[in-house]
Length: 403
Image (cartoon, rainbow, N blue to C red; front, side, top):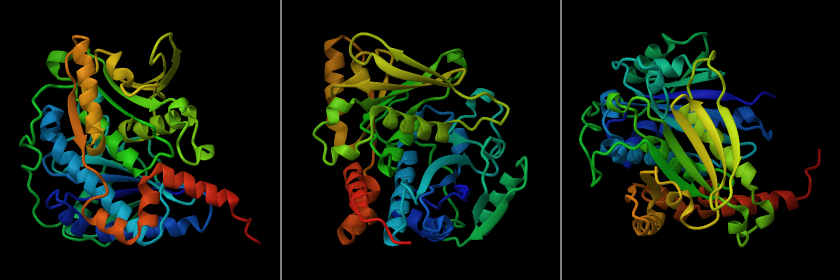
């Protein structure tokens, strides 16, 4: 069977806090994930789900330095991914693996906000409804929240579609309540106003899961648009992917993915949330590089004329952050903030400018923490590469099913 590929349009939430996000979207997510899971009918296929989350005030806010809007955006992104974990764990719905659902979240402007006129700016994970509708995505079905705001969002979206797609309404929550369009306009936290055109993140990225998706999407969010005064500048997202030898002591190592598998899945996910080019545009250009010295093995993907993804094999705790002076920002999780401090200490020794550190919330807190306490096996398999490898081992050792 052909793998299902669907889009879910979510209207703007009344607020970005976890409880409001849950009230607004839980019913809709439960309906869509259950429908897609049932459509797989026990096969080993994977269903793909693009989730487009509308945010009031997103378009004017996205033109500010991303440091000013990063925190509220990553808060709502974290809360949506938490909710996905909770919905799927409580219903025994597989995520990201065979027989599961590969979900990705991007942000779209409200229905009253215009399209991006500048072709170079039509890149996710923040984009206009029109850019999403005219992209090369070939969805089999489109789900929308069957409320006044959900139908308004659907109508604005389908008005720009190049060809008809089946649409299905799903139950909605409180997203029809007035949302604050000042949500993203005020700066939160200590970040300054610098614009970042070279950002970095690092990890193992084994058996890519929602925790990785959150971190990678947040990294793309930290990358600024090129403003008029910086016209002609290249932008880059550098992803350090741990070398195989760094992972030699991991549990269930025989089910660990190779570096090639891990970088390819990472690059594929980043491309899926960034590249919304129309069908006539060319595919990304790929270049494999092997240079002497640390961090000399990497792969370059040029998505557009001004944007490069750089997947670097690293073998120490610092990775490319101490060999590439152009990197100006680093995205970390709350558990790895000490690593960011260590990087800046090392850069200072070299006389380099410190990196601005963008911190992402943890997934196992709030509602997710309660779920983890009540159903640890189900929860951990959604966000732990170790648990995913353990399950792969159990599946490999299980006797074949009789037919």
